[in-house]
Image (cartoon, rainbow, N blue to C red; front, top):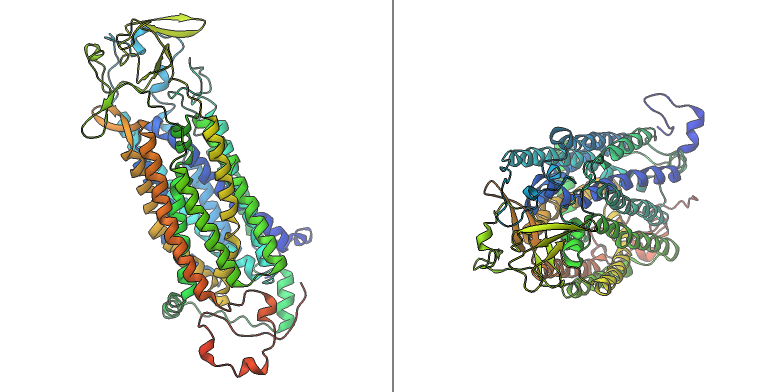
Length: 632
């Protein structure tokens, strides 16, 4: 049980890897890869929406499929897997996740780069420029609706499968690390895992930035650049990379023993007896009842739930938020998202783990720090609501229902179709952006220095000319302040995560550890991971000004009301984060004299302790003492 092996094959050269350090590296890399593939999908959401004509509500549902899968598997894996070979369960889940990555590539195999890119051929004619009174307009391809639905089902199924696979990682994988480490060393080991895992989103966003900088068909060279809203990047390329790396890590994880050698020796010295109970439905009910009555666990769980709910909108739609608020390209938005806030988060995780392991602050100090950091998070998101780049230069006006009316007297005779793709043009004085050359009333065009100049535009006074692309806007100052504040908030809030996890693990009996993690994950799934993406997707859709249309049906959103989107996202986030702060205050109130370090648990009780009134002992504190002092 304490030798590295793969179903009986255990060569001597492999045994040097049977250590906590090796496990931390492999477990951290596996977490990095899972976080990276999740971030990669988020980084490519806006492109997937454009390619398959999906609204944000649909992509929000796809994201929640991960958590539906997790919710169904978490409790069973945690309960039955905790009595078995934990790393083999983790490896099996990772293998399922790898297969789901390959499945995500299928939509591109089935449908190719799509119809839109064909219309963006360098051989431009007036029949594909969306000019006024355009003749020879192609008939709409209504099969695009079925492409979107089939892709929706494929991606949702892949997300569901990876949710099942990832459930063993977060429950059994973390429990295995805690089982094989001294309590004093767990915070720094967990921080090291967190440090590696938090580089996963950075890697995912960087890869999405790279793949989105490649046109969806690498063999084509469209007559516009990445900053043009018609650009569609090669969203599909990253899934082959993640599937292969996930499969390799799954095989490596399967080699780890049921218990690491040093922990086996420690248990032998102390006369440790494996009191693992026979798994039964009756015992399962007792365990659940015991944990549900644990005040620290419950308050900590729901605090985490509301905290994550508040941040979900930013986590999932951050690239789109940056695109709409600061007019960055999809590739640039993914690069920025991955390289700024998440790096600061990783640094904060390691810093807090190091401080906890060295100075061993009491549980009350850790809980108080969580209250402080999350309070700053509330204030930060409130400030974000007023930080953006607005230039209300889109030609048109509001309808009674809040949508944007693109048709005015100057272009009404152009007969611009509702299915016209978003292809913005800017007046020569850089003051007004039009949805398309048709909506600017432009009748002809010419090419000057490889730049298209649209002419005879009835909606533009004076020169009556326009150039391709939206009018430029200077956002650098506000964008810089946004990044600075984002990085500061991510660093500060992440310093509370290690302490939060330590309290979670120490508030329950050792045998209940895996189940307590599963309870937290299930609560997160039910109350956050499933409803939050759908709700925030709906908030984004409700701030849409101009929808793309396919055969009379709504497709993806082309233009958003920037101010409305910013208010909805940030004020909603602040509200949920404020509730999390109140629940953290409850944790601070209940945590009391929770024992979280080895010297707390391994010291013989004094006579005074023995005579202490049992009423003074909180029910969630494990007061069993072990009088042997062990070295690492």
